Image (tube, rainbow, N blue to C red):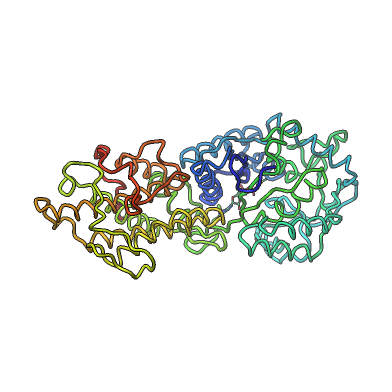
Length: 549
Ligand code: ME8
């Protein structure tokens, strides 16, 4: 395997596969957008071949019951909902390369094979199992995770402490997986890979789980209770547990059991915090048991609430991503979710917040800067202006120093901030802190607006040679900043970034992060953009969003 982060290294990024029991909401889209932005960022760094896999989780009691309630067959329900997910992802610009449906034959084959590997590894045994089962979570829950609640008719019943869903006492013969035997291997894996689970609070949480009880896991259901699933090979009275089935999608997509070796285990899973246990305990243990390595990284995010409340069908506050994309545009909505979503903690969604953020940062700050610095009144020749070293001489040493030209201390601070921005953004993407990368960019955009405002280039007179040099230098610096922002923003707002870069005449081959330069002339090097004809004026970069009713 090539060294981590080295050139030419392959990487498989994944989103969770979404339950096909209901339509997509913004939480699902958030999972997918995080993975999409990571993929796009990686491609711009030309870091090696990458894939982004997603799909729908179509088996299990939950789907079987949802179909029965909707008066349709599970297959029809899945077909329809899977289509909705594809549509929502495509509409939001999620550039997935693979979409797995767990009902597909290639996936069923991979799951059957995986089961065989577990059986051959001697980690399965048949046992009588009884406990409280929560169908919406598709899990047996221990007493410590239960609370007293009420059912749909208001009668007292036991519910899941975490989700409030009713649980049912269930007793059946199941195949069990010897999870309890994997405490040491899991602890060793985490000790040797302190970056395996990001951000760190989730890593710590998994370590704590490993100090607690680690009971064996029931990995099949009786066929008479669950028909909608993959049968246990050589025991048709049992159906494979939907979580084992679903997790194997990450292998079936890369051709398990024949050709997964080209990708596995260079895998980064993006998951919500509610499914961390499945990905950080069960999945690595199952992989080890089947003779495979655990995934390289698990990137965990928290949840979106809506006006302070949990999103739920019963509250009627589920936010439909296609409505949002219609209202705020693909880029507006992507920007909002990725800029405001903080993986470590839950974030609250409401419409006014989207309008305010997108208007202030995309429309006013970034769009305004582009429009003002490329306006025909200020740049009549529509060319990438020239930089004058006399106006903006290089100063070495402290940021506090000022040159002998017309640039002031604040201007040197701006140049230093933008020069270090690409590396900073890279490291934030690497650390799964996309929101911080966007915060830094927004901060630099504000500084650049300050620079423009401070020097009032519209007041300079082109007929005076000295004034013209300074005017062009101000514009050159501003366009250089904009070019860096446009390049760095591509993974998050691809359309807006394209519009900005096209306006600045940045060609398709000049948009990579690996070759990104900034203000080469300040460093005494040639600037390939200087003097170039700018792209056509295609109007406002990002239209302000209107007031909400
Ligand atoms: O869990 N905010 O599927 P799913 C943010 N099929 N993210 C949220 C969210 C919210 N309010 N609600 C859900 C499943 N999510 C399984 C996965 S993978 C082998 C199987 C996220 O459709 C959730 O955390 O219930 C998860 O990452 C994703 O949406 C899919 O949830």
